Length: 299
Length: 155
Ligand SMILES: Cc1cc2nc3c(=O)[nH]c(=O)nc-3n(C[C@H](O)[C@H](O)[C@H](O)COP(=O)(O)OP(=O)(O)OC[C@H]3O[C@@H](n4cnc5c(N)ncnc54)[C@H](O)[C@@H]3O)c2cc1C
Ligand code: FES
Image (cartoon, rainbow over the protein chains, first blue to last red):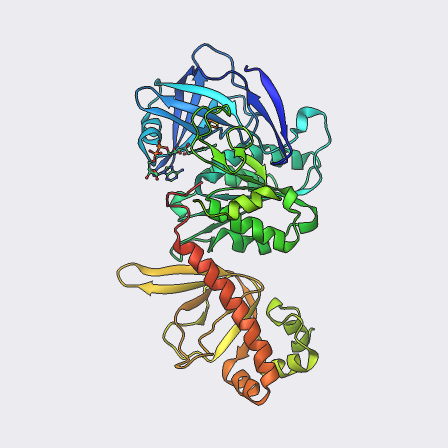
């Protein structure tokens, strides 16, 4: 288990646990490979030398395929799951392709965990569950970094925590990830709504931008917190729509991503304005500076 | 049982419309129900009605040659279905099909056009609402054109 530091940052309003001294990857073996959609796989990893990496929902690891490269990938498992460490990867480029193609038995390097988390109090932590409703909005593979959080939130709801509204957007029905989880969360009391960009009339769900689900969801804007992960434009418009509905911008968390290299706040690759997203993010409160940064054009 | 004025006043499209204007619109309106699968309107047919959706969901479909019907959008409670009654040649440009049991107010477009021509203040109030609704639909369509979830910026 890696040593942890607790880092609190006034500019992002989010505190984070960071893996310390993680420049050297630990060897992990692929113990299971789950095909989620045509171009998305989940890799289940176990450390070669035993033990288990400790993480919080929303944090990421740097995964390396030897001889190809290293990329940041969020943990898609839940801390409460006793099983192997899960990461869900979409095959878009050289490294993600090599990761997606890795087979059971292959070795992967893992550094981390890094970054801030979704700020969820686990139900077994002794603290009272947060009574506020929570609306979780995920676009495409943006559901991966939220998966562990939703597991915790659904469990917390059973223990008196707020209601969980999960709104998922995808390009088309075949690209929806974690279908089994969506069904299980709905059975366990979460309100799960899915909207796709295109579909045939056989698709029973909604068609349209994920933001169109917000009005129908039924949460109380004055008493809700929100967690958004997906394409940056989607998060920008969703956050604005939430604020227009009366949600406090400080109660909205967004996951911002830039290319990562060191993961430790040293190299500056992940800079966004004054933030180093590997350290101050990826999960930040939408209020103030971040809402401005999200609206700024890149120069 | 609610009067037509009451039904209209609870729909977001008519929010804050004054009582006189509501009464005029009510004179052109009737309460309708569609069972799942029933068509509210058919592409190419003459468009003389529009619908304020109160309950249930409606899918807007177009027929693409070689691909069959494609759903371009689904809309639910609070939405307005149909703008073709506004502009000649008053013809539907899509099918609208009830996905679940739909409760709606059907408004006779020709009747409303006539009333709006006689009462410019009513016409302006309605056009402002229509423009707002059209703008938000246009914005949503523009965003979908970006193919957000499939492109470079996914995540
Ligand atoms: C904090 C953080 C968490 C992340 N978590 C995940 C995760 O859980 N799962 C995951 O699959 N990825 C995740 N990513 C993205 C990941 O780190 C890589 O950027 C991505 O896998 C592409 O790397 P590559 O080397 O394969 O492709 P590159 O060689 O970098 O890019 C190849 C091609 O793909 C395009 N491309 C690059 N990145 C993306 C992208 N994200 N989406 C679509 N197209 C892209 C490029 O424009 C280029 O055309 C995360 C990134 C960050 C910063
Ligand atoms: S990745 Fe090096 S500073 Fe963030």
